[in-house]
Image (cartoon, rainbow, N blue to C red):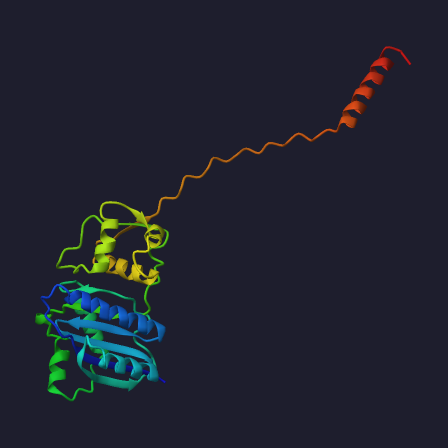
Length: 269
């Protein structure tokens, strides 16, 4: 049975803490890996200290995921606000996307999400109403902080056989630098480097992790992608027909025939 659930949770900690964004990315990364392994798709959003996740998948897998989140020390006050069986999934074709505050697409994304789910809420607590309202403000108060739709993660096809570079580091208003990005960005600043070369450096524990960091840079438009330069091809070698080897016996026969012909031409027998 395929179901759709949604739940809210609080992210403990101070937003001004330099490690706040890193905690969010780690939470998102663990959710992304788990969801991929268990065929769960959906959306993962964060606004200030509130997390809002909408998920679709097999009922048993969703129940396990919510239980897992309810026991995650990085979250508190987990509350399910949508739980229903569905005939058609909404998120199975979504790709990972990062929408920062002020991004031109964030209002359209929220409106689309709200229209799809507005008749399905099962909100019983005033606190949950207030938390959910943070993600769907009126049109003159749109101020989402971070929105990350999560679905089938890009496997890196976009970057393979390409050269990658950056002209400048991301601005603080675009993206907070995590430890992972600090490992990656110096390799890309002011020079082009092939995707395979980055992969061979083993900066991260897996190719998925590298792709995730590239996606973060790509979605805020600081990653430059160009075809990798192919090695110059070697000049084509002209084919030469090797002379047919001639045995010593053949050479002797040719010489003998030539000698006989010469004697015949002079009238000698």
